[in-house]
Length: 173
Picture (cartoon, rainbow, N blue to C red):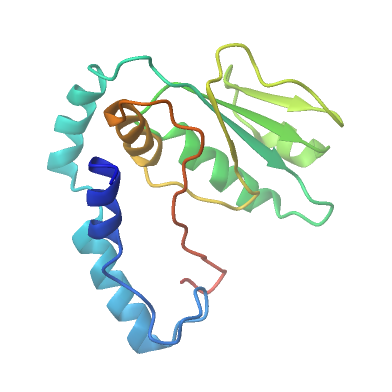
């Protein structure tokens, strides 16, 4: 086993849509999921304690998130993705956006941790872990902090980290 990772998997493995089709929930399943998510989301009171514990994380992992802007992206969804990243309690991250969008660039608030790249580039200096971050993806504010805590709890180097996702559309879950 992997100790804290096993515990997190057990904690978050408690809900499964009856239809087995993520992103295609009927009303009853949406209500069930919302109840489950509310019960398992980090509460505001817990967030203060989490923030204090983050100072103890050894090695300070820095996450390099890579986003590709598809030709038919919705700028508003990209900006929501970026805002969810900027709201992270874990401050050590960089976002590299591939693709061109004057609309996104013009609407993006200044942020030194975000860079736009052409067809190829290297990860920024200091990045220790890379992750895909889709245009339209949203992160809970403690998502990167929880991954950093899991990495810190491992005695051996970690080559791969898998996290779950929820699919959200214009109509919700």
